[in-house]
Image (cartoon, rainbow, N blue to C red; front, side, top):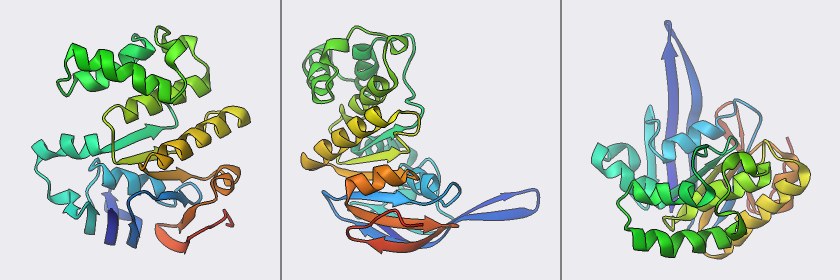
Length: 229
């Protein structure tokens, strides 16, 4: 479970401060699919950064499975991040590696054996429909294929949680809905999915719980919401 308890996040520079998150409170239960929506600057990306401990809260607690993320030692952070898969708008693929190698690299950095790579990488590529593109480099893939590859890389550690930060922002309509269908399929496997988006059509197509943010605050939390701001 993910829990935000009275979470604030302030950025300070040049004798001024900006509050990106302001007293955030909510829970996301295991197995949920939650869309976090709001305009640019609402605090969606900051919220996700706190979950993977890329940022630390200025106040309050961010809990992942009842563990205070801010209280982790540096050596414990990689274990947290293996539990939480992340995908982004800009894919973050390694241009000099094939699709297979991009996924394999995510396993190699945590010490996976060659046998594990040969066993697990084809399986996860198949899940995202990329098994026939294993030998292709990123520049040989369409935008939708690049995002599916990024999802494969995020899934290879069998994460309990998947965070998707504007994952369809660079995609056309057809590829957008292919990616959303894939995220829903992953959720059906039991993975908790948190989708941050400002795309009305995407959020309404998902039709699940919607947390609406504006100016760093949660202004609405609907069990079956719509993008209505």
